[in-house]
Amino acid sequence: MKFQIFKKIILGLIIPLVSFSCSSVKENENGPYFGNGFKNGWADQNSISIWTRLTKTLDLNKNGVKFLDMELDKKALNKKAKKPNFLIPKQIPDGYSIEEMEGAMPGILGEVKLSYYQNDYSNRIQTNWEIVDSTKNYTKQWKLDGLLSGAKYNIELLARNINTKLITDTLKGEFITAPDSNQIKDIQFSIVSCHDYGRKDHENGHTIYESLANKNLDFYVHTGDITYYDASNPHSFTEELMRFKWDRLFALPLQRKFFTKTTTYFQKDDHDVLCDDSFPGMVYGDVSFERGLEIFDKEQFPSNELPYKTIRWGKDLQVWLIEGRNYRSKNTDSDGPEKTILGKIQRDWLFSTINESDATFKIIISPTPILGPDRPKGKNDNLSNKAFKYEGDLVRSFINKHKNTYVCSGDRHWQYATHYDGTNLWEFGSGPGADKHANGWDQNNKLKEHHFLRVKGGFLLVDIYREDNNAKIKFSHCDVNGVVVNEKVF
Image (tube, rainbow, N blue to C red):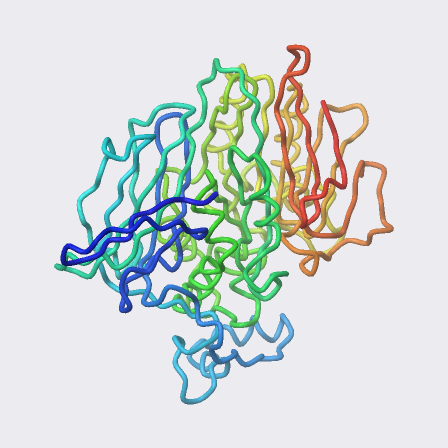
């Protein structure tokens, strides 16, 4: 969608109307800019959180210096990761700073102001000018309350230097709020997983964001592994390098444009908290697991009081976004009643809110599999693995008692639909965000419970609609170009 904006001209010059196809317009050669766009999160009927960041430049450093490949296998890498001060110089060539590296999008101090409105700009609600938080990577967040349900809102962000009046950048976008629980409405949403700058399939980001932009989405869910701290280019052994990866990923034009126009929910998993199969007490370089949680929950994404939430999207749909890292036991603990991924409080909340729901369809969106099947060897990290069998059985048994209740998951690098005969259990895996990211399962190893298996990238599309006044739900696996490769209707 193209927006119309007014480019401010100083000293009484005529204000020309400018049409533009990207959502940010450079107003001043020296910034600050909205180089990472903005993201929203946690939308319900009456509220939403908004996140943005100020940057020195409008675009990432496309022609920067490349990081050096450390050429270490996983075992050796994890051992050497305990010495980050030794490793960092090994990734950045001598004589260069991190701002000179390919993909760099450095932050900068400045002030930001947010306005939002439905149709009439003159009735907009405005915040005060506020300075971004340099201790949180030059970011700023707002919680917008008192919104109308099932409504579209326009957003405008302004940037300027501290204690000046000149607007240096303007950013426009939009979001929608969830409809009320008694409203019959067609809903379409998407689920994605597993992104990585090094495995993007388009010079401007991930192709799926062009495909998703052509859908009629009400909202979008990213189930985690949004970036990989423990992947090369660079291995993120420090907070600075972790932030570098976020700054780079969300400066990609396809992602940046998509997130300014879509209601979104973000979950996290192991790689975007710390490293592969991470759990409490672990350290990667000089960053702890606990610090990794803080960076994700409080700095890099729109924040919520709790990292899990259920949202009603009209009469026929309720979704549960569950949290898989904050409350988990160590993977190495012995299995039993005390070992958990969800934590007792979240698990009790999940069960009670599903029991209370009168939505026609209920969807549990999990960062990791609950049914699987997962790889038979080497996996001890999710509810489909033997390492968490006790809690996994509790959750599966509970879901099996409820009709029209489905699981959608991320994490796995293949697309699948799983159903166990004689049960109500169905799980749909979105697959990774690009074909080059697909791996981990043999395409020829299709098991009895696999109703669909495809070791390729893409996304999951879910439609809720009425047919002869009967509620229907359709799960569609799509390839990266948006072509439907599998469909299941209930």
